[in-house]
Image 1 (cartoon, one colour):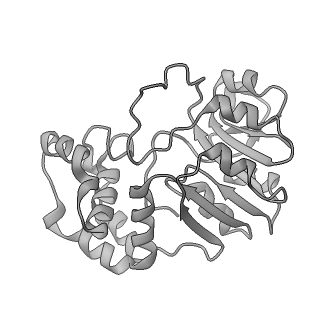
Image 2 (cartoon, helix red, strand yellow; image 1 turned 120 degrees about the vertical axis):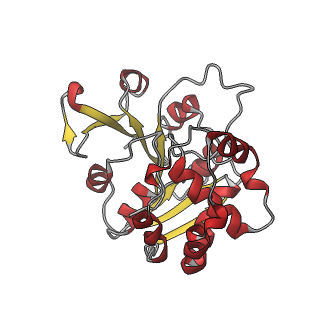
Image 3 (cartoon, rainbow, N blue to C red; image 1 turned 180 degrees about the vertical axis):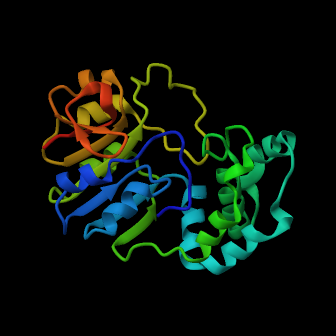
Length: 253
């Protein structure tokens, strides 16, 4: 169970992914953020190597995995509380600049729970999910033994092309678009910009096993029509009915 929220994508298709990727497999997962899919796979006999290009994302998870008691104590402290949208908006611009990695990790968690999007650098203030029960889960968090996280500045495409052909490459991509207006667009420091056109081309290379998860979008069905398509409903079950589909899994094998 992940302590992080991500309202930008659904990520409820772990059961269908387990049917696709057999136990004992090595999975390279990219654009790591909340860990919902990765932890579910690692908890069920898959070996997951997760990668993020975002230093703040890496710092949060490194602090949590290294010393959950310390992070829990800092998040529980009133000293890191704030009131009002104005202060929240100011922190969204500067939260990642503090020298202490544990303060950055604490702000990451608090602002994630208080953001309407689950992103730290964007979203409106909505503190209802920063509860004592949620905070208490930090103290008992344990990453699966089969899970490993790395900070990697290498591009997603380059990592996939260099991956072991026997491993599986997983990209929880969320919202699909053709990246027509991405040039010059600012990406939040905790986000990984995904080039969906590049993923379409990567799926044509059958030397590397690639699995992409998307929120349901008719354009995904068209863009990846030559690949294997699995639709998933809101309960995480496979479905053949478009009107029930909430997510799409794309595989090139």
